[in-house]
Length: 350
Image 1 (cartoon, rainbow, N blue to C red):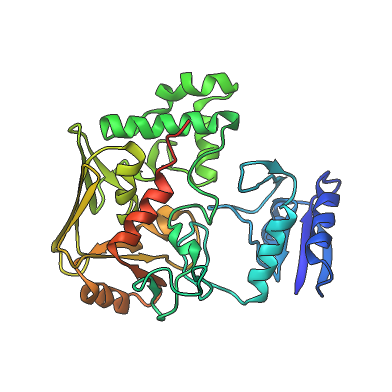
Image 2 (image 1 turned 90 degrees about the horizontal axis):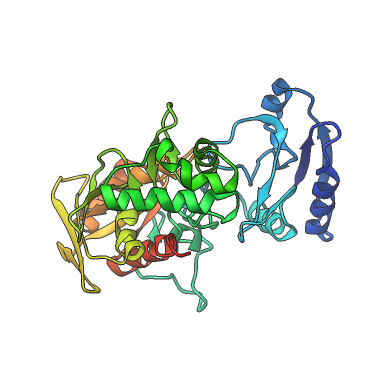
């Protein structure tokens, strides 16, 4: 394996990055080199997404969703939200292990399926939780829109969680996205503007913005109509980004909902009613396909239109056969509900 550490001249985090790469290798054989990048053209040519960038055989396993080449200073966020000037040794070891096992479907949004997904007994997590090649689906696949295992709960620092939760509550109360102006009082205690906080939330794939900086989606909600309509108990109707997002809304808001969707193949309705802690699916044969388009990017473009309800296995497999470039797997109703609850249930906790 070739490990390339890309830095700008004088980068203060370069020594830390080299130190952690060495520690992560722990005796493994690898060719390690450090390359200095002096301008934007070189950053683009080398694939440097900020300094330092660590490439494993030319690939940046830590690239955030929507990353663009840059000579700017780069920070890495660990699973607990802690920021550092280089990936942790544990994160580097995990990336090295992935590289040693060969390339898998890309997982910027946490949607991919790999052969490594087994429960503690070595069995598939669920009988229907198999990818399109018939293999067990990885745990990461059950973190459908969970930012590649990093979760959808924004960090508390720099106003991120406060603004993110305000956005989600506004969607739940009105069915629409708030404006940046409406979020200024929420962002102010952090010493930042709402626009600055929203931009960082978008860069980390907690939400998406349009070309004008307006909120287009804040998982699980969409500001524009989608295939998945969710009627909340209080009378508000919202749109969800995908099937799993819709199933996560009752857990996140602790409310009853009626989800109305349609099979992408036949157009037949699929309805999921969650009331009083009981969930009823119609038709009873309905399943969910969890897929991810090739090429990476935020979950909104990589996953959401490939995570749908189907009236049954037959139509789901028809869709799968017609989309060979979308790897993924089928999950049954109980597993789909669990994924949604696990992904979105914690988002509004203080």
